[in-house]
Amino acid sequence: MPIRWDYKFFTLVIMKKIIFYFLILVIISSCAKQKEKDETMNSATSRKWWKEAVVYQIYPRSFKDTNGDGIGDLKGIISKLDYVKSLGVDVVWLNPIYGSPNADNGYDISDYRSIMKEFGTMQDFDTLLKDMHEKGLKLVMDLVVNHTSDEHRWFKESRKSRDNPYRDYYHWLPAEKGKPPFRPGAFEADGSGWRYDSVTNSYYLHYFSYKQPDLNWENPKVRQEIYKMMNWWLKKGIDGFRMDVIPFIAKDTTFPVITQKILDEKYKGRWDIYLASGPHLHDYLKEMNKEVLSKYDIMSLAEGAGMTKETALNFVDEDRHELDMGYHFDGVSLGYIPGYFKKMDPNWSLVEFKKIYSDWDAVYKDKGWGTIYLGNHDQPRMVSRWGNDSPEFRAPSSKMLTTFLLSMRGTPYYYYGDEIGMTNAKFDKIEDYRDIETLAAYEKVKLAGGDLKQFIEDQKTGGARDNGRTPMQWDTSENAGFTTGTPWLKVNKNYKEVNVAKEDKNPNSVLNYFRRMVKLRKENPVLIYGAYHLLKGDDPNIYAYTRTLDNEKVLVLLNFKDHDVDMQLKELKGSHQTLINNYKSVNVKEDTITLKPYQAVILSLN
Ligand code: NOJ
Image 1 (tube, protein in one colour):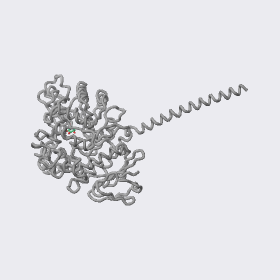
Image 2: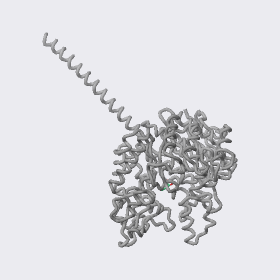
Image 3: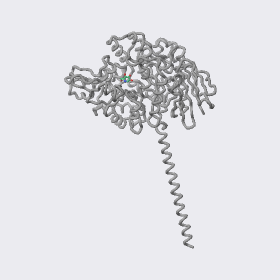
Image 4: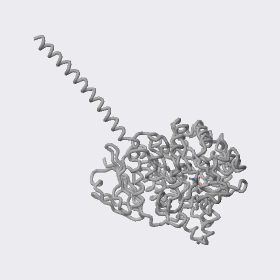
C-alpha cells in the first residue's frame, strides 16, 4: 500500500513539474513570438520622432530680409517663426548659413563655426535656436563636408606648397604626371572636376565648381576635424544634419581611368553612381556615427546623390549604425530629355512616376526608412513641374501634390513657398539668373554654338534652380514683403495673386489645405506607418494607393490630369468616409469614382 501512495505522490510531483515546465515553455515561446512580431514590425513601424515629423525647408537667402540688403537673414526667420509654427510642421531644415563667399550660395563654406555675414551673427543663431525650441520646433542644419570653399583656411594653406601640413586635406595630383583622369565638375562649363593651380604646378579635385575643392576624407585628420565641428554644433543643441552629397566623400585615390565602358558596365552609365562608390565610404559613415551621431537624439539625412535602390539600405539600415534617412534622385530626375540641360518633357509618364515611388517604398518595407519630396532648392517649383501652374489649376494641383507628399510612407520634406503654391520664376533673360549651375550650363551651350534662346525657354519649365529660389511671397506690398531693398533674385511676378496674407484669410486656400493635410497625417498614424499598396499602376491618369495599419485602411486617389477621369476600384464598393478632398464633393457611384481635374481625395475604408 505505502508503495502505491508513494507512487501516487511521485506521479503528482512529476505532473506538477511537467505543468511547471510546460508553463515556462509557453512563456518563453510567447516571448519569442512577441520578439518575432516586434522584428517583423521592424524599422518601418518602430516609432521615432523623425519618422513622424514633417520637415519644412527654408532657403534662408530667400525667406525674409530684415535689414534691407535684399538678402534674407536669421532675424527674418525669427520674425516668421509663428508662421512656421502655424503650419503644423515639426522640423526646419536650413540651407547652409555658415561663413561663405557664396560661389554656390553657402555650399562653399569658408568657416564652419561662423555665420554668413549677410545672414547675421552667432547671437542671432542662438536666439533662433532658442526661440524654435521654445515653440516646439526642431532645427536641422546643412552639413557640407564633401568640399569646402577655396577660401577656407585649410585650402589657402593647402595650396601654398606641396609640403604644407594641410596639403593632404585636399586631393592634389602633380602636373608633371600629366592631366589626371577625367572626373566630372558639375558647375564648370568644360565639365572638368580638376583645376590646375600654378602655385605648386598641380591639379586639385572639385566635383562641383573650382571654388569648391573636395576634402580628402582618406586623411584621418580631416575626419577628426569634421567630427569635432559636428559635435560643436550638436552641443549647441541643434537637432540634426542634412548631409550634402555625403555619398561622394570617399575617393579611390589611385584615381583610375574610368572609361565609358566601365561606367556603363559597373555604374549604369552614371557618374553619380561611380562617385558614390568610394572604397571606404561606409567605414567613414560608421565612424561618424560612433564619434558623433550616436551620442545625441537627432536625425541625420543623406542627400542621396548616386544612391540607388540597391545601395540605399547600406546607408540607413539601422543595424549598420550609419544614417537615419536618405533622399533619392530617381523621382526628380524623371522626365528630363537626354542630351539637354534639365529640359523637361511635358509628356512625362505618370506610370513611371508611380513605379519609381512604389519601388522606393518597397526598399524600406522591412528595414530603414525613406523620405519623400517633390521640390527643394535644387529643383524647379513642384507645381510647375508635376502639377499645373496655370491660374485655373495652380491651386487644385498644388493641393493634389501636397496630398501625395503627406500621405506616402517616409518623412515628408516640404519646401518653403510650396505651401502657398509658388511657381517657377520663368526668367526671360540669363541676366536674371544667379545660380552657378545654370550660368555654367548656359556657358556650355554658348561654347558649343547651341541655341541660347531655346535654352532660356527650356528653363522656364525645366530644372533651373533659381526657379525655386525666388523670395518668399508674404503679401502684396513691394517685393512681396520680402525686403525693403533690392532682392538678390527677382520676386516672382505673380506675388499679388500668390502670397501668404491672401491665402491665410481664405479657408480654401492652398496654404490652409496644407495645414489641414499636415494635421490629418499627425492624427492618423496609418498615413505615417501604414503599409503602402499601389492600385492600378498602369493607369496613366490617376495615382491610387492604399495605406494599411492594423485595422485602419485608407485609399488615396490623385488625378494628375487637367480633365475629369474615372477609375473603377473594388475598394470603393464598401462604406467609406472622406478624410480630405481638395474639391467640395466627391463623385462615387458604386465602384467607380470620377475625379475632377487634379482632384485629390483620401477615403477611410473602415
Ligand atoms: C547639393 C546641394 O543641394 C546643392 O545646392 C549644391 O550646389 C551641391 N550639393 C554642392 O554642394
